[in-house]
Each structure stands twice: as C-alpha cells, then as structure tokens.
Image (cartoon, rainbow, N blue to C red; front, side):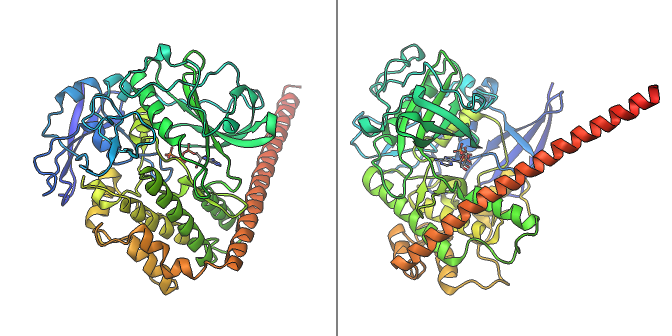
Length: 523
Ligand SMILES: Nc1ncnc2c1ncn2[C@@H]1O[C@H](COP(=O)(O)OP(=O)(O)OP(=O)(O)O)[C@@H](O)[C@H]1O
C-alpha cells in the first residue's frame, strides 16, 4: 500500500508542476510527477510520459544534493499517464534530422546514411521504452575490478541498418563500430587496465594501456540490461554517428565501442585519454587544497586567461560538431570538458542520448542543472542551449559553486531547481569580487534567458574575452597552467594515498594495542 502525499510546489510559470510523493511501506520515497505544461508554443502538443520529464530534466548524480529521488516509472504508471500529463515537447526542427532514441518514436531517422547530417537527440522522448527498460538496472557499476588484467573474449557490436532491429542474439556479430580508421582499431584483449579514473551516472571510466602501441586510452563501461535489444540497438545507432566524428583538437577522439552480451552485458567505449582530467575533477582537487589550507580560497585556479582558453576550446568544439555533423552536445558541464597537459580542451560525452543513459541508470540523486530555460520549457532548442550551459559552467569554475544552488542555497529538489532556472533572474558572476568587464560581459551574454537574444557561438568566438588571450604567448602560458595542474593532481593523489596509509597503520596499531590489552586482562 502506498501512502500518497501531494506536494504543491510554487506555481511555476511555464512549468506548472504538481508533485506527488508516494511513500512506500518500506519507507522509500518515490516521487511521481504529473506535470502539466502550458506554454504558448507547445499548447496542444501531447508528447510525453513520465520519463520525458526525467530525461528532459537531465537528472544526474550530483553529489552535493542528498535527497534520493526516484521517479516512479513502472508499468502501471506508464499506463496511467495520459496524454494530458504532458511535460516536454519534442522540438520540430525542420532543418535537421533527429536521431531518435527509439524506433517507435515519432522522430525516427529515415536514413541510415552516416554521412547524412543528423542531430543526436539527447533528449528525445521515451515513447516505446518498455517498462522493463525504464526500470532497468540498479546500476551496479562494473569494470574496474579486474585491474591489470586484459579483458578477454569480447566482441565489437555489429551495426545494423537503421530499419532493422538488432536483437541481442545478433549483437555479438563482429564489428563495425570500431573507430575512424583501421589504425584506430583497438582489440579489447590488447588492453591492460591501469586504474579507475571516475564514475558517472551511466558507468565507470578507467585508464587502460593499449599494449601494442603503448598508448594510454580511456575505457568507459556502461552496464546494460540483459536482453534489452531496444537500448542496445539505440546505443549502437548513436555510437555509429559518434564514430564518424573525425579527430579534432577540441573533441575527444573515439576509438571504438564494443558489446558482448554473453560476458558482462555492458557496452564499452574506448576514447582518447586526457591526462589532466575533467574540469570538475580539477575543481575538486583545488577545493581539497583549500581545505588543507595549503592554498588560499581567495586565489582561484581558474583565472581569466584559463577561462578564456576553456571557453574558446568549448566553443570551437561545439562549432565543429554542429557545422560538420549537426550534432548539438546538450550536456556541457565541467565533467564533460577535459584538459590535457598539451594545453588542449576536449569535449566528451556527446552523441549518446542522456535519455538512454538515464533509462539505464534509473536512479538519481539531484540534478544536472546546466540545462537552458528553453529546454526546460520544452521550446525548440538549438545549439544556444550549450551556450547557456557554458555560461553556468564558467560561473561555477570561477566561484567554486554551482550558480543555481551554491552558497547554502541548495534547491529544494529538482522542481525547485527547474523553476529557478525558468523564473528567477539570469545567473550572474557574484558582486563583491572583481571580474574584468570582458569576463562579466561574456558570462552575461551566455546567460541570457531568451535564447534569441543570447549570443551565438560565432559571436562569442569573437568576443573580447577570447581575443584578449589569443596570442601564441598566451597559449604558452595556458600550457604551463595545464602542466601545473597535472602536477597538482599528482600531489593531491600522493597526499590522499599517504593519508590512507597513515589511517591503515593507525587502525592496525589500535587493533594491536586492543588485542594486547585484552590478553593482559585475561592473563
Ligand atoms: N577520456 C577521458 N579522459 C580522462 N578522464 C575521463 C575521460 N572520460 C571521462 N573521464 C573522467 O571520468 C569521469 C566519469 O565520466 P563519465 O562520463 O562516466 O561521467 P560524468 O560525465 O562525470 O557524469 P554523467 O554520467 O552524469 O554525465 C569524468 O568526470 C572524468 O573526470
């Protein structure tokens, strides 16, 4: 029996959401949304079910937010959700082909030609997702346990024609998803895992050595539900687009994707390794140094030159993806921007639907909140949504706090957060600290709520903030910064390891003295 509690949130202009919280007998809080969106542009469009809000909201693990929110997406509820429970409108983007996540979706791509420009629709709705797939996975993350052992007997997945459905039994046919050229082709059995890099909502990333050419690669493992051919099929389709993205200075190079249902039931994606890691990682290392009081919190690592270079790299990467492949990233955030010690900024995690990943990872706490107001409202979204996210990311880097939830002002759940993005004034750099007029103006132009007034990628690439630091000597300075960051990351690792060793020794010593006391007492 469920005990139902209806939470009326603030009446959200443009969102108008009612939250129902179901309290199961075992105490687990499940929140079910019935959302009604009234917006002039989407009026009359009945597009989605409960998963749409889940996916459109891009709900991710965000460590700071404590409340575990599990949207209830079981079969009964799916049946119960009527078209009037509309949340998000699929954008009608006439000039681009939308690569839908599901074959039943209204926006299925009609062509399998990989040269056809297509948008990988990271937020397509969830029509057709079977209840089992939406409920899939209690996301046990696998992949890093076999450190230092080569992975054996895994096969690449075959890429089916788009019209054809890929059943898991045919999924382990030999390969076409293997990178851009034959030199990129990496056999999994030639990899030796070196250690875990990080874990996200969808899976785990480890560092691995490709023995034949001594190359370090990043290996991402995404567990998938057994026999879920829909999900696997879709991932294959999306990865087939990603694999065609040619190497670019600001894009992480894709080396291949693999799947073997008989062994681990996981999809493995191999990509270029970035030795300074992602911006969120660098920010956490910085915060740890501040905590240890070895550096002052008044002196951010992300100075104006660094921000200019990061912004320039992100904008160039976005521009390339869109111009060449009509891919909109849709998930610009610190963990998807990587840096290497050569001073290169690289975008990762584009092209595979977050919707799909969320359906795999099913539970989430907190939110990814870099989503633009027009996306939340279900309006037509464009590449300018990524510009908004870039603005938020810059504020977070220079202040160390997420702009819509830091400073002890954590949103009261996802809906509160969404309404803040839609209804509250645009995020700004905080007053009371001195930021240059170029940086301030750049952020302000990214964070304009009306998408039409927001600056375009091209305008921002010519902004004073970018031009100010575009000389070769500034590039050199940035390379120097990256090298310094790399050494700081190493130092942080060493400090953490030493602290761990000390703690282990202390525990051992305590145990010994306890044993000694016990034996003295008994004797
Ligand atoms: N190619 C790479 N080189 C170096 N580090 C990487 C690479 N790819 C990912 N990482 C690191 O691994 C971490 C986990 O990445 P992953 O893509 O699984 O999740 P995420 O981006 O943090 O979160 P989410 O799954 O919610 O998008 C990242 O935060 C990043 O620090």
